Length: 87
Image 1: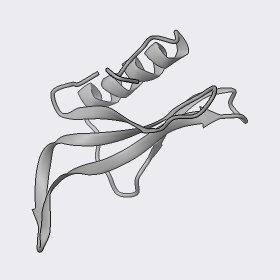
Image 2 (image 1 turned 90 degrees about the vertical axis):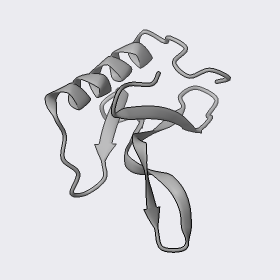
Image 3 (image 1 turned 120 degrees about the vertical axis):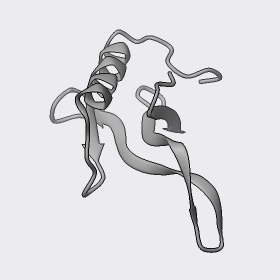
C-alpha cells in the first residue's frame, strides 16, 4: 500500500500478526551510506489494546494527510486485507 509521501513495508512476519515499518517515500543520502528511506515508525499488534497500533519514532512531524494514511492502513489491517504484495 504505497501513498504519496509514506509507504508501508513488512518488517517481520509472525504467525498471527505481522509488524510493518512506516517509511518515507523519498530517500536520503548520508555520508558513506547508500540512499535509503527514513523509518518514521512501526505498526504492530498490541496485546494491551487488542488491536494494531502505530508507534512513531521520536521527533517526527505529521500532516493530516499522512496521519489519514496511517489510519487507513490500520483500518485495513483490522479488516484483514492483504496490504503488501508478496506478504
